[in-house]
Image (cartoon, rainbow, N blue to C red; front, side, top):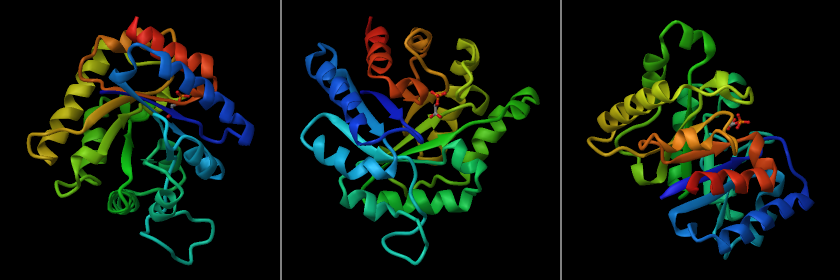
Length: 247
Ligand code: PGA
């Protein structure tokens, strides 16, 4: 099963549901529809209406983050995994580089993963190196530490998807070479197999994925799908990514 996950970030108002309607009607007619799953992570403000509208459809709705507590607390403006689940969210991103840059630490991320799983959300755990780390050949050690400091064997690997998103690639139009990406994905899989004892969660690639470059990634068999930012705000681009992937 492949995944096409659209991360809307700070984009979307109620009428943006039209984008999902278009993606849904494409998907329901697509001959390849049983080969992939579509997940969209709108902002919190749209989570409930979108999740209700697509409840019986094949598009899944998720959140872009969650707070590191289980249910209710006195943290102003925080949204817990329980609250996300109760409005119909099925997935949550955790550890996006935007949130790491704003202060999410490994121990916060571990709690987020723990409580998200406890509330039966599927976790899309994001990792990635920055440009300096890449230039200093630190990519492998950075990724290893991001994985080892948060994921644990007792977490259900079937409910975790790892998204590799090099920070220098997010929103820049730059993508890793096929050779580098292939090596890095194999490395991530190795680290995950160590954590989860033989079995690895699925691995997605994210960072400037668009309808033109998606073909490049298809060659890398370790990649189970994509986390798509910018291009997921356009139904046409998002649909073209899926079309071109299977072409
Ligand atoms: P991008 O974003 O596709 O716009 O590079 C990806 C992400 O941040 O998840």
